[in-house]
Length: 266
Image (cartoon, rainbow, N blue to C red):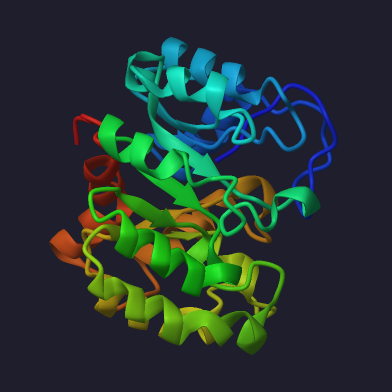
């Protein structure tokens, strides 16, 4: 989830210059969502990391954070990561790499300094990796002690329906690597069908079967979803007959908390 205090939100995100923690909490309460992980949208609000930490400090039982550092300045960013988890809410890192100048950072050497540092500090790293899964595999294999998360179902984020599923075979193959997990974030946004978006259910099932309930995490990215927050929840809790019992509990929160080391009381 994102909160911000300035800027022009990118893509399909709500075109509002401010979206506060309190506004998010109101929507979470209405949807029956107890807690969640904030991803600071620094691509449009450079202060988003501070805003996320302030929200986690104020509402420690509701928010954790996967934050960001400047990847182009390792000489100043590396020291920040020492003790990163002592900052309010911070449990790891997340980099969308969606801006034009960032799109090759995973492969051009810009991020090479990050992987060993994050592994040493016990910081999981989430990446919007659907468009570069082969490169992602090389990173995961080279750093087996680094916990990695593939965001947005590992699908082609800017595509819909069948076109979004072209990465599915590469995605499920990555499940063989025990240091890789996947966030099923924003699933409704991949379908042009009405709720409950049945044409993507098989892809979700295949991904769940490959990764298992402890490495397959529900999420929303609510500020860009085509449906209500409650429907984002019930799509998983009521519309997927293969997801139930303890498996459902892991997918709906226990798994992500364990993966990022969030000592959340369920």
